[in-house]
Amino acid sequence: MMITQDSMQHDADASIGIYTKLEQDIYAKLIDTLKHTRYSKVDKNNALAWQLEQLSKMGVLTESVVSMAAKFTKTSKKSLEHLIKENGIQIVDEVDDDLKHKLHKKVAVSPDIRNTINSMMNQTWKDLDNSVNESLLTRNTQNNAALRAYQGIIKQTTLETVTGLKTHERAFADTVYKWIGAGLSSPLTDKGGHHWSLEGYSRMVIQTTAHQTFNNLRLKRMQDYGTHLAVMTSHPASRPACAYIQGQVVNVVPPGNQYYNDKYDSIYNHGYGKPAGTQGINCGHELIPFIDGVNTNNQPQYDPDEAIAKGKVVQKQRSRERAIRATKKQLAAAQELGDEQGVQHYKSQLANQQKSVRELVKNHDFLARDYSREKVVLGPQKQYNKAKLRLDQRHTLAQIKSGAWGTKVNADKQAPHMKSTHGKGKSYFDDSVDAQKLVDKYTGKGKLIEQKNGFSNRELVTGVKLPGKVITLDGTGLPITGFTIHHSKQRTHVVPYAKKE
Image (cartoon, rainbow, N blue to C red; front, side):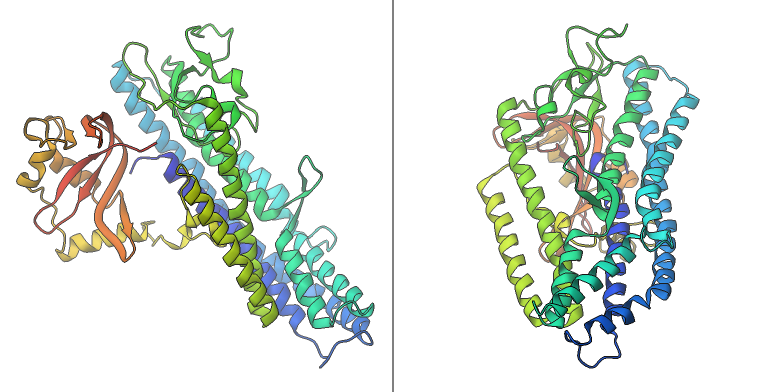
């Protein structure tokens, strides 16, 4: 299966999920440790004794936290190697194949490409290791993020109990929720002086790495081939740095470079290389190799000011999704504590937050609800078996193996989607396309389209450019960027697909 922005994000989510799960497990360990006490009832008269009892557990707790972090660290490094190294090599192979056919030549892969892949892996791991892993692996109780949280919960609970502000049970629960809402703190701060949470920082680093791996390797390989122009994909919503050049042909070299083409703008004029610039943190635009006189630019065009305004709405959705994730963590803690008041509070808060997202999406047709961004623990790492197949891929292969789905293309069903025999208003492939070869090559490698009651029989394969046209409802013909395999026992056929912007 070809590497796409979506598949890179899928693998990035798996890596992020490891750190999310680690933070959850650590807080569960802290709660479990604090729940156990020799006192049948804690109040302002014995709260200080309770504090000393809990602080005396720090030695054993330290070893538990370090052990947990060490196990997750090994898993995290393997996940990142897949995201960066394995995917990186495939990205290079795929852009090579594209340029080889467009330019009718083959350029050997330079050692610099391999060095770039290794450099991205080393830098990403260094960032995470220094700021996340070391914050949990250290036995210094003042530097270990988990132990700082443990001490903070104890001290705040004791203070509120001794002063009579709250009962011990209420003070303990509320303090736990406060710390969980903030997350385990890293040593890094943002521009406002606020500390990044370990989970938030790892999310930012990994998402940025996924995007840079995808685009930087493509750009380097393009330069090896002497290709210095690209088409930037376009989206209805965009950050300011991208809004004025998205959907356009752009230089991927700076002005003044010997290969600069003054017919086109440059990504370097729009913050390339900076966090908020084009191709920066959380940028989702793709750069597609462009050969003057060979390619055509088929990207939809959007008004820059409207795209920027819509981009701000997207940021509202992301903010509300973060709030939902935080509330779900607090709800899980309330359930762990057996705090009925807390459970009811966070259930109500969660319902209101989800309603807010629903209304935002309903009121803006360019938004879409993505439940994966609202999950506390992202699931991709659980969806792979030893062969690293997703659940939908395993379902496809199981259907084929059982005979429920056939592997032979039905000529009568395929005919309406071939150029010489296509029906009116039907999308079609050029007659040179062999539908049977597509089924043979890609079955089980695409993504099954999901329905309310489970997986459908339609398998979507993207990132494959084929001759032909996708006919829209208004009769417009779009270039093919993939296809859907319609699986059936005896009526299997393939239908062209174009990504909807």
